[in-house]
Image 1 (cartoon, protein in one colour):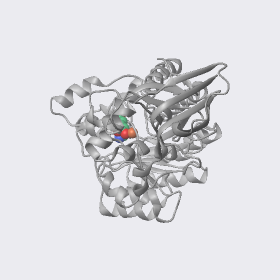
Image 2 (spheres, helix red, strand yellow):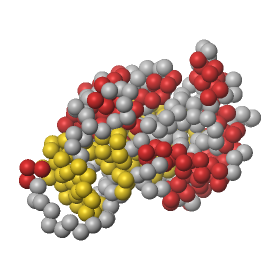
Image 3 (tube, protein in one colour):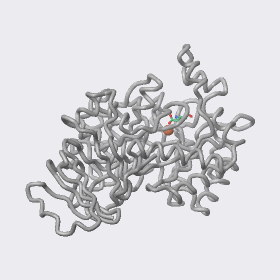
Image 4 (cartoon, protein in one colour):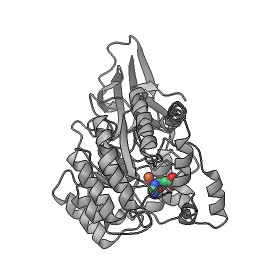
Length: 421
Ligand code: NIG
Ligand code: FE
């Protein structure tokens, strides 16, 4: 199958030799080729260029033409932080929040993550898989072309492994690249557990099994007051590192506990959330990226800020320090019940004052880097899978935020084939 996209208003993220990630000051210069064409064959991007030097069509056989007139073509979104496998929504908690309870108060009363874990423990593996696959189709429909999915709603050895097996099945059957994260320390289960004893159990008993069965690409923990402290999270990161499992860590969502510095020093691939950020945190991230092409990426989750009404990650401050920023959905039933990455990009622009290209780069090339998929996703380049977005006709990329009620994505192509939900 061959497709020619012609008259593209601008081909965004198109590179002959793509970089692996873009640092803060580079993100506004994410490559764009105006008035472009793009050729796809058998699901792979084979060539692109300017319409001014379009070579013409030699072979019309089996060629589909997409006239993009006024529309942009972008790499599909790379969503590097989701909790897509879960048992049930928590809209009752949402109603409590409207009536004045905070996310933390609901969690302390046994709701929140513990609530999700109880429901997940009693749900069958097949049902979890079917539901998550449906959610994945919805996410792809919004334009997601690569995704990370975490465990963390198991909160027993058995249920954590069940979640990871579900993610492995999704990985094997999904049409897009999927990365799996073992969220070992998400909340302290009820009963006799303490954060110390749970962390030890995860490190000593479960992590080796996860590694042996090849069930995860990363480990994660929730470094937060009332959840897991800096020392506990550090011990998990270092134990996982010995097994060659890098870390992506939930940190500074509600409280700055100096976990960012620890994560950076322990070599985390990304630190995620960062709604609360100290100068020390920014400095740690700046230094980690100063002369390293593999420093820690800062991943902001503006859907969570929007939904919980908490501060937005100060990404401009981080970008000024030249830190690479990724944007992800954090899709989960408690703090961000939406997988719509276009909305996330819109919030990046509207609420975090990112320029349109900065926000797009954060949700594509840097999202791919934050889940180790730089060689497969996040840019438009010859030889790459044609996971692409076609926007609706737009004045400029700022329309993603300016026309804030509109869905910017008109069509999604996975391996060159139009996605239909
Ligand atoms: O990233 N903060 C920790 N974990 C999720 C929320 C989990 C939940 O509320 O179910 C997050 O926001
Ligand atoms: Fe999360």
